Image (cartoon, rainbow over all chains, first blue to last red; front, side, top):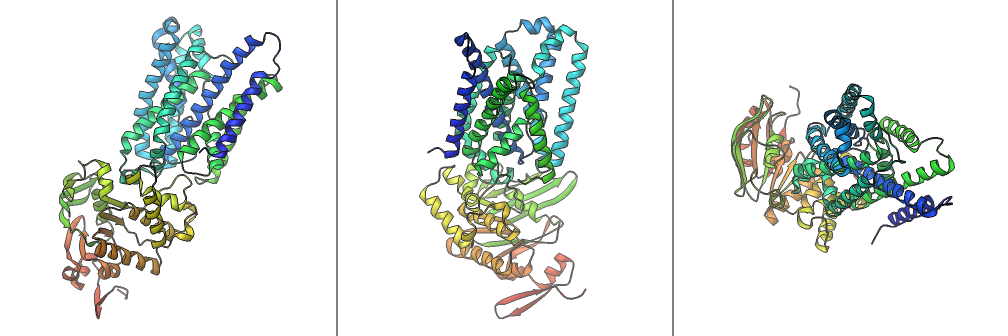
Amino acid sequence: MFDKRLIVLFICLALASGVFLTWGLTGRIWFILELRSVKLVALISVGISIGLATVLFQTLSGNRILTPSIMGFDALFLLVQTSFVFSLGGVGYAGLSDLTLFAANTLVMVVAAVALFGMILRRSRKDIHLMILVGVVFGLMFRAISAFLQRMINPSEFSYIQGAMFAQFSAINGIELIASVVVLVMIGIWLARHCAVLDVVALGRDTARGLGINYDRFQFTTLCVIAALVSVSTALVGPITFLGLLVSTLAHSLMKSHRHALILPAAALISALVLVVGQTYFERIMRLQSTLSVAIEFGGGLLFLILLARGKTL
Amino acid sequence: MISIEHVSYKIGDTPIISDVTTALPKGKVTALIGPNGAGKSSLLNIIARQATATTGTVEIDGLDVTQTDPRILAHKMAIVSQHVGVASRLRVRDLIGFGRWPHNHGRPTQIDVDKIDEALSQFDLEPLAHRFVDELSGGQRQRAFVAMGFVQDTDWVLLDEPLNNLDLRHARALMAHLKQMSAQHGKSIVIVLHDLNFAMSWADHIVALKNGQVAFSGPTRDVAHASSLSDLYNTDVQIHAQGEQFFVAHHGPL
């Protein structure tokens, strides 16, 4: 029933999680286990979100180089957060409950992403260079506006944003985590039912429409899903630009298939595996001398350059 | 029958098709011919719903293409277009299998498998069945896309320049196949063609477009003459008859 490679990936992830939880367990075992399992669930959730979001976005945009992060999705998320702090003020922002904040963030993010990226995809799907350019310009613009707003608020309010700005797996908010897991489960169910449609959508708008798919509505829904996934991962740990690219490339070359029923779970598992193994390595072996996000950005950035140099096909 | 009523189409301010009214007969092979930029592909795309007419209506067997549920239309007509980008690594067999989507929605049955096997053998694709589509030559890929249109098993098949990149043997085999489908199985074929010899030998009906308007249309033997074709292409075209065969000559020095 299940593909062997997926089972192997799953076993690897289970083993890595086991090691992450139990390595060097001394002292107050239950306290440490609780801390670590929260972190583990967060790592896995973030991994799954990034893996799924990237594969979905690449299917919609019909290429293997662009990812939601490269197109400025998470810069948009930071802008949304900054605008919240800016308009509500630090006290107002802190006064909101975590759940309200998470819901509001995700909602604004979904609306903004669908409006913007729906338009970009429609206009430039056939022209990958134009799409890269638009993505880079949007990303820069979002970052510039965020930076501008951040300069105008006072330093104590800025610290609220700072928490969201950098990838950090050490401080994770429990309520956000639960909300994220719920969102992920819902998205997982939706994806399981629409895997086959995604295979057709990957053939392009014209072909998919010719086969009787309501392409524009499906693209709209999928963009909503991507925006929600990016919100989940960015809300939990902040932006990690190149992980998605790394993961989708690995998933495609491992599965060698066009079927989303195989690629989506592979990308999700690989992504979670990279994060769990990486975090274990940096916490236990490197003793936090460096950070996981730096290593991922380095590796992923290198891969991005290689892919660009080799051209579109892979 | 596909009836096209007062269809106009503009890209920006440039008129591509201006007030075209014509009918494409059911159960026949219809060729759309005309010089470059005459609007052949645009008209085909409007029928296929890939483009939306600025004004006018297109009905296929009485169904307005812009109003009908796309799932119903997918059972009515199949489209084989010139440019299909395949993003993910896709094997020929899987590509053709997508043609069965309107019937099985991703859950293939034995009928689907049989249809795909049949298409693979008919289009000479059996040795290529497990190759990746992006590793094929232009002509092989073209045949795979045509096969995908055929397994969709619709009353109407629309093809946009399917002979591009095909060698002599495969071009001829494809046209013979189209003819057989319409003659024996009552399918209706609409095909954009550049090579007049193919149009003369295989098409039952011709619609000639020029500058976005219908220059002439009707049964091939009645409307395709040396004079009408010369006018259509603004260059001297001669027709030589040899028995039942017609040869269009346009190769000499100007």
